[in-house]
Amino acid sequence: MKLSQFKFKLPEEKIALHPTKYRDESRLMVLHRKTGEIEHKMFKDILEYFDDKDVFIFNDTKVFPARLYGNKEKTGARIEVFLLRELNEELRLWDVLVDPARKIRIGNKLYFGDDDSMVAEVIDNTTSRGRTLRFLYDGPHDEFKKALYALGETPLPHSIINRPVEDEDAERFQSIFARNEGAVTAPTASLHFSRELMKRMEIKGIDFAYITLHAGLGNFRDIDVEDLTKHKTDSEQMIVSPEAVKIVNHAKDTNKQVCAVGTTVMRAIESTVSTDGHLKEYEGWTNKFIFPPYDFTVANSMISNFHMPLSTLLMIVAAFGGYEQVMGAYDVALQEGYRFGTYGDAMLITDRPLKKEGDTDAKDIK
Image 1 (cartoon, rainbow, N blue to C red):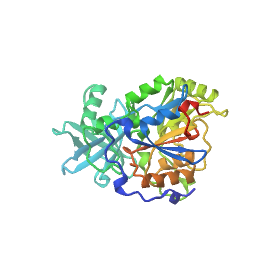
Image 2 (cartoon, rainbow, N blue to C red):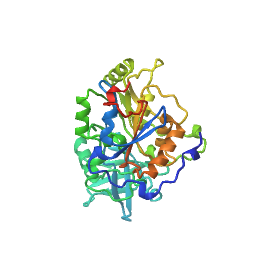
Image 3 (spheres, rainbow, N blue to C red):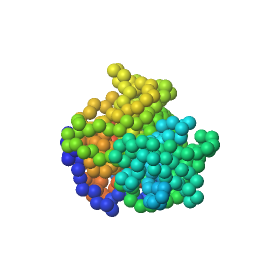
Image 4 (cartoon, one colour):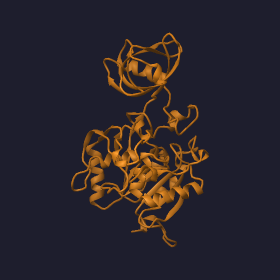
């Protein structure tokens, strides 16, 4: 497919700048994949579409405060430093992006904090905006990380949420089950799940499997080729544990629903599949790029937010739900006032038949 096929007009006012008051009270569009029928619900109604022993796969990655602002030595110029990942604990080396990059050269020193208490030296250029920084800090590594993170702020994607970071973002730009630190952006489909909703899911007998994929800035990087087969995505670190494999494969073997919560989960599980269609244990990296047409192996339902035009995230959703159906659903979403982006509303794509009048409960649908 071509990049231009994923272009649509998204008015700025349709992009959510803040989350809903309660996590599970965003809107939910339900797209029935086999028929193309659409329903309009609240997110907490998602319970209606799943039964005992169905499985939700969540990404338990944890976002760290990756965006810092420092001053360049001598000139005092304000520099944004975006932490990507730690390269070496002992040497305090970090892979970062800097802005404006043209001002930052090897050998420059950057000062952070009101009292310039944190100092970093630029020791390498990696890309046009990429640099390797060595932080000059005496003390234990845990103490260093704590001091560094205290200087950072929640890394909202400013290309989508164009406003200053607020105190509330530290909690809301994080899923309630986040535990493995390493992401610089949140797996947004996970943000809709509240503790109350998950307790109700447990009571209904729904099982949870957790994988880890540390979502990076590649999710927001522009694609600069029209032919999608020529696009290369950034690699992201991921872990699929034996426990997750056991839960997911049992659901598949017993013909239960397996729901991928978000595009990061979908990429992760499709990156480690055996020839017989089962999920495999894995610890490493993935640069898998999914776009239509694509045959999915593990999940038979999916939850995702409404994504930006021309984004790789939209392409994954379109591959799963069908290009024509998903783009049509996006048109409906715009007409119906759904909120787009990181803090926006959600879509469930399912093979379950539309509940007809007279059906008493979702579990009666076979």
